[in-house]
Length: 183
Image (cartoon, rainbow, N blue to C red; front, top):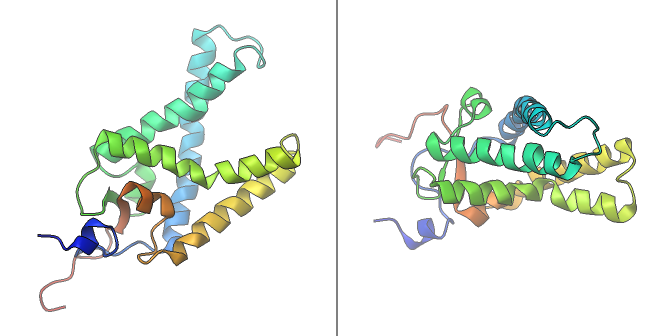
């Protein structure tokens, strides 16, 4: 029976460690490259189905479909089905609940929504500062926000991201074998 600390997400379950931040960020970058293709394809399908001939016509629907719904379906499906997207498989990172179980669709969806904390504070700051029309400033504030959020995982007891702590999930390193009784 798990200890109360495991249920609270304070102690990791026996087995696999948290992947190093460097590997998680490399996976994050790979995920971004892959998502570019997913978003591009979904935007193309949306544009064809709605007969969108001007970028400003139907822009809200396009943004909602391609940038919010499509990635949400992508992540929720992979995380609840296998616990890994293609970049996570490549970097040997697995997503599981705090007690080592597979995610339900509801928990995977909750985690997807919580992962927007990577971007929303920086986007809000850029909007409030009036930088939303400047690509360079927007990129700089988004980059700084992502780096600061990633570094904040160093403050978590198991070095997990804070959205994982909120959702009761954790990333584990699948490169290393689970410790044996001799260890």
